[in-house]
Amino acid sequence: MKVVILAGGFGTRISEESHLIPKPMIEIGGKPIIWHIMKEYSYYGYHEFIICCGYKQHVIKEWFADYYLYNSDITFDFTDSNRMEVHNNVAEPWKVTIVDTGLNTMTGGRIKRIQQYIGDEPFMLTYGDGVSDVDIRKLESFHKAHGKIATVTAVNIRQRFGVLDIQKDGCISSFREKDHSDGGMINGGYMVLNPEIFDYLDDDETVFEKEPMQRLASEQELIAYKHSGFWKCMDTQRDKQQLEHMISSGTALWMKWQMGQ
Image 1: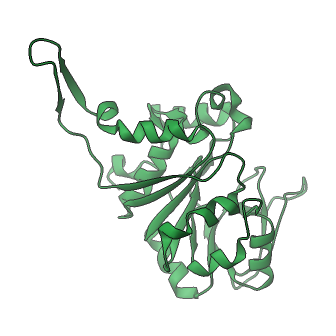
Image 2 (image 1 turned 90 degrees about the vertical axis):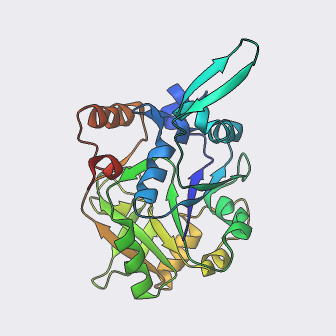
């Protein structure tokens, strides 16, 4: 199953760094947060990625093009041979397709633009700025078992995201903007979608979290996978500092590939 990562936004809430690079390329622990997200999926056996780019998309393409340079020891021989030698070839079992989905395209439009790379099969979808310790294999199994078009991972945390009204059977009855009085579960990304989702997406102006999700909810085609474990979105500089502290203190629960869990 392919993993689609939304990485095209402007990241205005963390503009201290996003004015120079795309938000998913902001580093925590010396690596871009998008790398951490990909390592999460790869830990569970998902190795094929489609990255939906937009704002400063060349930065993402250049980083992956030079992945060996960034992650291996290199000898530059400027003598007679004038050559470069890569040591300990640090590689990942990844296939990465990077797509320029437009500078001002909305989230639904970005997903619509990568339809040709998905084909007629279910796929994963998440945002390029959030990490979690969700068991992605269990998430996939949950999605396949209920047979609906869309599964969204629901997390219980006070944040500035859309609120999920969840029925007892797990169906999401509505998807709406957060109100100050809300303390309910929110959309944490880590979604699984059937290919029918493309029928809910119109054009570049489509905001995936609005009409498409609201329509899915009204048709009872949107199911919540409730996650009570760790989830964190890097929305501000303070969020970044908190994630950095977790890494340095050895409490980064999403880094299962390092913890050997």
